[in-house]
Structures are given as structure tokens and as C-alpha cells.
Amino acid sequence: MPSYEPRIGDWYRNQQKQTFEVVAYDPEEGLVEIQYFDGDVEEIELDAWNELEINPVDPPEDWSGPFDGIGREEMGDVETAVFNGSIDNVLDDLDRND
Image 1: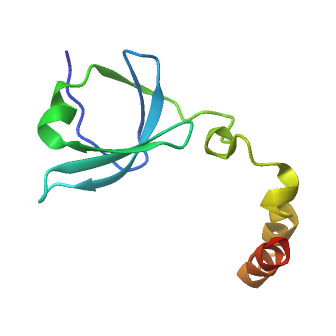
Image 2 (image 1 turned 120 degrees about the vertical axis):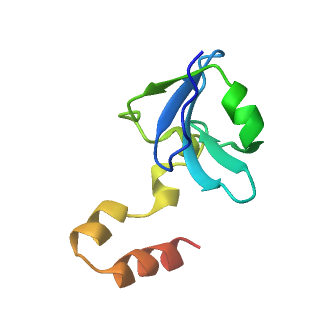
């Protein structure tokens, strides 16, 4: 069973067919934080990480997993705000949706 060095942004699939991304890694503390496609976050000790049976995978094409159950209207008009090239537009859209 190969062991993979945790790298932020890398995606893996475990034996239960769950896809997850490494979102944080602290080698000094020996902790790896992963986020599953559905949005759940888990912190794993490095020793446990090295025992995982995982395989690297490409990032999912559909990034909506963590947002399941949230309607598009609740997410605001992010495409327009990003297209306008201003973070202020994104923040304004979020404020309007509160």
C-alpha cells in the first residue's frame, strides 16, 4: 500500500469510495485536515494518514458537493460579481442575500 505525502489541494479516494481533498497540513503538529466532497471536514493524525488506503484522483468536475441543499438563489450572483473583477461586488451580493 503506497503512502502519499499530504499536499494541500491534492484529491484522493478512499476504500469507501469517498472523494476528499487535503485542505490543511501541519507537519509540526502531525495533523492533516481533509474535506470530503460533501463538505464534511475531518482532522487526521499523520500516523493515521500514512495507514489510509487511498488513491490519488483528479479534482471533481462538479464542485457543488459541499453546497448540496443550498439553492442557487441563496448563493448570489457570484458569476457576475467575479466577471466584474471586484471583490466589492461579491461582498455586496452576499450582503443583499442576508
